[in-house]
Length: 355
Ligand SMILES: Cc1cc2nc3c(=O)[nH]c(=O)nc-3n(C[C@H](O)[C@H](O)[C@H](O)COP(=O)(O)OP(=O)(O)OC[C@H]3O[C@@H](n4cnc5c(N)ncnc54)[C@H](O)[C@@H]3O)c2cc1C
Image 1 (cartoon, rainbow, N blue to C red):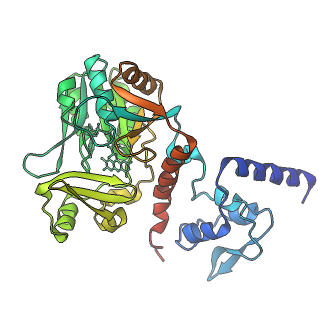
Image 2 (cartoon, rainbow, N blue to C red):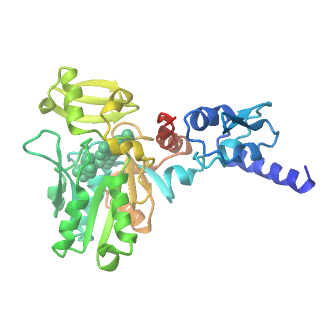
Image 3 (cartoon, rainbow, N blue to C red):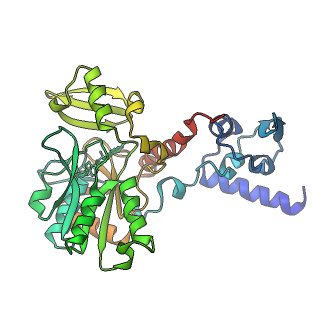
């Protein structure tokens, strides 16, 4: 190794130690090589500072193999184009993170941050309407995207429905009716649809810059196929029509019926996850103004990632107006969000190899 190369390796090692978790080659092997996600580029082999990894030809396929002693420095994992180690890749950019609890008396899932912020924006006429998910009258717990225009109306729309909701379609209806400023709540996939419409040169949301969307994303590990959910509950002797509340907390899916909670590990419901969820790697909704979920906070609180200036302005305003209680969260609780988001990113590696 030349002197320059040694210095570069030392610098890179110091940076990885400071900024990332340092994973050993075994993790890369488990998640990327064995699953078939490996692109055979050789970056792990080339990057290993102790030359412990060899690119071997096995049945004419290039396979990274550990042939020396791994020092768990994290280089191979960090340099692999199929992994995510940097915080920005995992939960996106944000300026601050809070735990928030509403001081209002209204329907909500966790801390009621979403309803409080949207209620405030409607009240101050900063948005003309908010598009949220209501419940169908015909099918229990089937979401129906709906628009609300007053603070009073939004207070009834809190709570989580764990099935895809067509909030984007309703947002479009609002614009077609000449509303120009809308708040939209949705999972990362919904918010990505808005982002696409705002950035794509062929989209009228981009062409007609008069439209404005305040985007609130909900953390989402997965949503469920409606019929699958009905079937799952039936198999457990439950009728979806009797369910009072659904929740996902600390890896468990919780269903409240007759005032009593029943719970299952969320992984028991993997088979009924919406098919589109296996393509998603974004837990928090990186393209939003505010991202809201429960991970990182105690029950009854919402964790809120602030991602834009107007997201910051809206959250600070609801705090100042005394509508919510709020405190900035510490590194440990933020780490819980990062760890779950990383888990979601890595879920794709559990796909069965195609050959
Ligand atoms: C499919 C799904 C999966 C989720 N998974 C997780 C998870 O794994 N971990 C986690 O921490 N949080 C998860 N969340 C987010 C969590 O359930 C809460 O929505 C979030 O913490 C905000 O709580 P709140 O009390 O501030 O919101 P509330 O004040 O209760 O407001 C919630 C708002 O979301 C709207 N809404 C409800 N369901 C939908 C939907 N399907 N599509 C669009 N809008 C909707 C409601 O109409 C309401 O306006 C998930 C949400 C969804 C929709």
